[in-house]
Length: 419
Ligand SMILES: Cc1cc2nc3c(=O)[nH]c(=O)nc-3n(C[C@H](O)[C@H](O)[C@H](O)COP(=O)(O)OP(=O)(O)OC[C@H]3O[C@@H](n4cnc5c(N)ncnc54)[C@H](O)[C@@H]3O)c2cc1C
Image 1: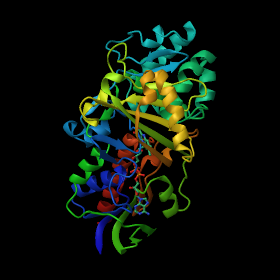
Image 2 (image 1 turned 30 degrees about the vertical axis):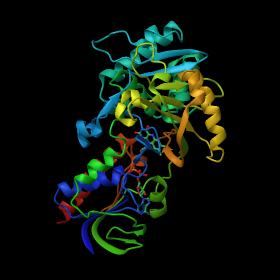
Image 3 (image 1 turned 60 degrees about the horizontal axis):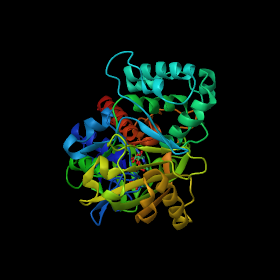
Image 4 (image 1 turned 60 degrees about the vertical axis):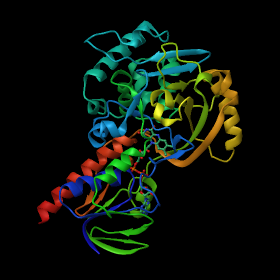
């Protein structure tokens, strides 16, 4: 078989690169080892609930996502701006969308940190909020721990806000994350809102697959060898003018020895359901992403996803997604009991009686942004051989899509130059 481009992997990045190449008039084939498209961003409907491997948090400011999936398809359900950080019985909101220059950010009103902290953080948040997202990734690379010390933040601000926020959103409790990644995440607090896909996270892959000619994706096809002009899989050999490896971080390293191997962390997502009336409303009656800062708690973040997007649960029922990082996945029942006990503090005592719908453990779930981190790793390895995915860019859905764009542009440019 001969094609213009063979894409290895039918996750978000693979489908996105294929859709852009097909749009450019190239004959593309996508080889996916699994029986479904979507990779780590799949979903399924179980008894009227939409579940996935992770409680995927998206953000209304992600422009590549918005340009890729139709608003009606994505049906973004937004949370209140920012997050609530919960510890010691307190639930403090961090985040505000500025409407005019120099408007005081919530950093100024938060009951945490010194006056100097608030002034410094407000200045940073203002700069991040008024600049493009890429600007947050500019500047020197250091760990968050080192940079926060240089910026002069107090221990209180770091331990009660910055550390739990980065633990909840970047799977990093040690402030080992790149400060540029940390700033990119801080920007999400002051521009737009966190949100979930009302159609389920799988909609991204479904829409992308819908943009491809019929028969482009071959499921159940595991690739074991890649070259710049061919791919060999359990289904045989395909010759191609270009090959794009979009197989996820670890498989990409297996297929392309020598490629940078990112640090990944396991993610366990606990899906619980309850009667809607059993979960008290937030004080402002709008749903929040709760980040857990309680010492010793396994919970990183928890959210009533059906309050942001009611279509994710049957009428009258609430669906709650709770994220835990770094577990080994061996004691899931015990973890569930511990988590429910903590959720009783966070969502009300009825949580102890909630129904556990599912617990999903993904051993290599998310790429960490451990410093030093390169947020724009090259996607062109040699002329004819390319790589994309969340390990070449920001480690999330937006990053997977951005890396696919870069890879598609490189392929088109090289093939044009060759012909
Ligand atoms: C539990 C969990 C929670 C998450 N939470 C969030 C979140 O809140 N927000 C967010 O933005 N992102 C989140 N992410 C990350 C997000 O899902 C990923 O960044 C994104 O899906 C990566 O897409 P990808 O295409 O780069 O890689 P993948 O999704 O890994 O796709 C790779 C594909 O290649 C296939 N493949 C692998 N090897 C081969 C081979 N040899 N031959 C053929 N096919 C192969 C795989 O089966 C897979 O389908 C989460 C991920 C997990 C697992």
